[in-house]
Image 1 (cartoon, one colour):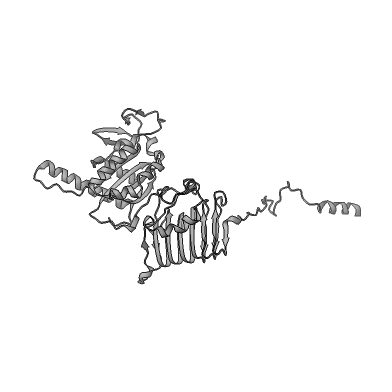
Image 2: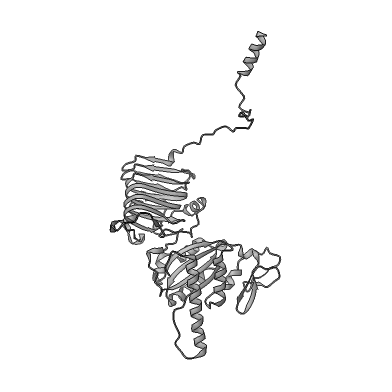
Amino acid sequence: MGICNSLCKSANNKPKRSSEKTYNNQRTYVPPVVEKKINPNAIIENVSNSTIIRSISEINGDAIKIEKCKNSTIIIMDYSAQVNINECTNCTFFIAPCRGSIYLNKCEKIKIISASSQFRCRDLSDSKISIYSTSKPAIERVKNLQLSCFCFMYTELPEMFSKADLSIWDNSWSEYTKFSQTTDPSHEIKYFEVNSDEDFMADYRRALKDQEISLDQYYPIAFTHGMSLPIHKENNHMIVLLKEAYLDNSKMIELLKLELLDDLNIRLIKTCTLEKGNKIIQEVESVLKTNKNNKLDFFVKGVNNTNPNTNYNNNHNQIIPNSGGSGNISSNNKNFTIPATIIKNDYVLLWFVTDEENFDTYVNILDNELENFVSILKNDLHVVKSENKDQRDIKNEFFEGNKKLKELLKMIFNDYDI
């Protein structure tokens, strides 16, 4: 018995093979704990008087921690999960597209260009920030803060936006929420335009002089004025709607260059995406039926002909009415049936403020350069004063279209006083 007991104990004390599964008291399989490796490139601490550049594939979507740095330029060119910047002084940052939030805390004399789904800062003073943020930036306890639209460019940047799941059209940079209220004027947030502030870009130019970038372009993010530009009730508004699935982003950004729009006295206020089936899209269709300035045929252009109930006329870029469609829109006194395959696409909406003459000029430019913008809507504030009945009818039509368009803008941009 003694020999048997010894053999049994010896067998029980043998280490288990790695291929064997382990179970708890309830006989449930417990997977082994795998420790996540810390990415040393994603931690930058206690750096002084230095230039740090993290290139493509050095971060690979990890979380970034930057802490207690002074008098330094830190450039992250790879996408990330989230970024925390704490207790930094007199530093310049560029943060490539971040899937989550970028949070600045207890920093002063900071210059930062960043892109993220959320931007937050607290206890930030004497700083300039040029940002892209999908959601409204959250700002608390700031002093002498200046804010601008994102502006940066290098070859892989559009790919970084894609990897971080950020749409280049959903930038809410100016629609910040300010949590701390005070009457001290130094706590008010001011706006600046990067193109007129060469000093803002100086550190980036020095740090990246050997890199393949161009700081004179605004692609892949269009420069939008947002709430930095007062919107007056007498302004003319223009909406351009594009089908996202068929949108050539690079070409569209070329048509939204700041210099071109400035020459035409056009201001791009905001861009956004609208999901399929959105109530706003239905309202747009309603406006299109009565608004004389439209390009309705592009609702039905460039669609993959996969619906058996649809005949696509390549010569006229129109859908020929057929049974089995999912909606009707009137154009040129004809009813076209829009199949379900068409309205599944999301849309990109661009909102401009301009005048009538430059509106027409810009329409011609879009006509020559684009193949897939869906519609153009304009409110016309010119009143025809005449006793002629036909002209009175036209005047009423203008007012009706203007009213619908403003209601539409308020639905989309409820933060703006239009």
